[in-house]
Image (cartoon, rainbow over all chains, first blue to last red; front, side, top):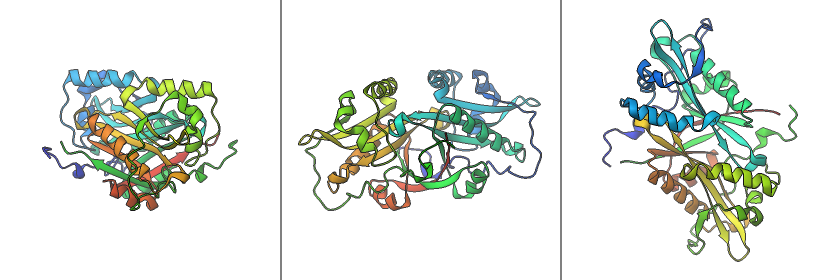
Length: 175
Length: 175
């Protein structure tokens, strides 16, 4: 019980940071690309902090985790949108491909950690990130893609083409 | 839309196959171990078929997928319980460790595909499988472990120490 933060206070994936699904125009000018090591200096970790407690990570630790994930190739993808006017990362999300035995050695895409910067809302960046990750899972041969979100974000993900399926249960480890 | 099965008819993880959480005695005599290649001939794939559509897999395909997962080491664990009186796999479950950047390069355990054979209920095998996988995630340094289940299985997982957290959304790809 030595934790200095309350795990139950974690903001679930996507909560409160996705309300950009309005009638505002689509900003197609900002490309989506995969995470790069240089994004450590472009506010990527700070952006994640809008989703979940996120202490600063040293460049060395960032590179180490980056290499671990890169070794998984297309089975783990983190994408970002950079605002060229500021050089900052304003949206991100990830998907990883789980390989199963069921469904004839089927695969399932798991979408995680969707965040849009509070100053970059109403530009459909979140929707574009979700579409990018969903398409990656489809091309990877997944038979489905899943994600967990708060009840408040259900409508947003329904507009992205998702349907509610089950309940998410969690157990937190206090350290 | 060439699928011959209705993806929406998939039985969600653990549904209807876990109702063994009774006052019956704990059968500690059946050890939990990690999946082995020889389990292909012990009904492992057929057991998964009690959870989700699961066509037969050739030994070659089984070995190939087994090798892919084995290459992930402790980041992807499938455990099984074998009934020595029949030589059949009667319970299984898996957990994989997702590596993140948030929470100081934190890790999350994802529990999937919990199944107990219909003929082996009421022996707390499912509970023991969940405990085994949960403990693996904790030892691996995860700050939490999560899973998705039907609302009917909420009480079972609450007894295992989980709390309801979010809703699971899904998108199926028709092929």
